[in-house]
Image (cartoon, one colour):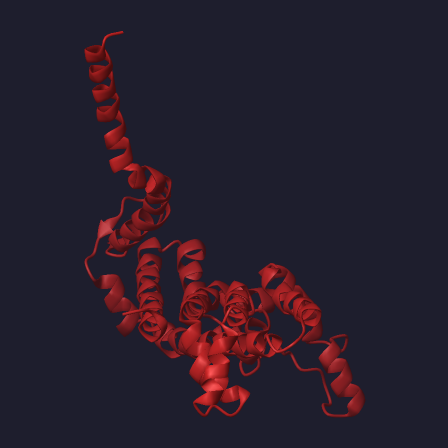
Length: 310
């Protein structure tokens, strides 16, 4: 083959290879983009569009503009008096509480030898891997409202109560139990991320901090550990937000009904399920979902503001 033919063939190969090399990054992320579009972007767009309609899942949707949103804040007394306060209380305690608990437990475990640290980390992580139904079943036995319930049985024997307490049906007891169960199962992947970040901090930083006047472990955690693991702290904060709203079904699983008794443990997620899959008011449920999306987005932005890089 002549030199001219080889040059022409090489030129053609370069023309074929160059576009592939130039756009290779798009080819690599294309599967993710397609899945993200199908399962995240499109459902959000459809939910926002559906929130402006009156739709019962059978008849053609009727466009009603902002009527659903007006109804939420002006006519839905249950939402304003029960659902929204419950959601705020639950999110404020379980979100930051679970996050702080994850950091404290990770920091404490980092002070232990490897074997003990590994065993305890697995034990603390296991509840987060358990399905919500299993968790509620275990705790339902503990807080059963009859004499066979473990807590009622102990209290009756000690003479602390005269008759069994319906823990999971009571308006004053269901929410605290939900918060307790949620915190117990909150040490998930965010906890492991923070633990790995702490273990990866350069020991020389602690030595330098002691020379600069840091005197105890608490000061080391504040001035050295936290600034050194900002990416892990950000990931843990985002996962805390996600886990808070993922565990919102605990009230229904514990009480066995949706809505929960007198809406004592009902959150926005449960309100969405109530209107969407029990009453089939899809437009109204979509409007509630949009409000929930806004709340989660604001919480995530706050996490990025605290721990994200400028």
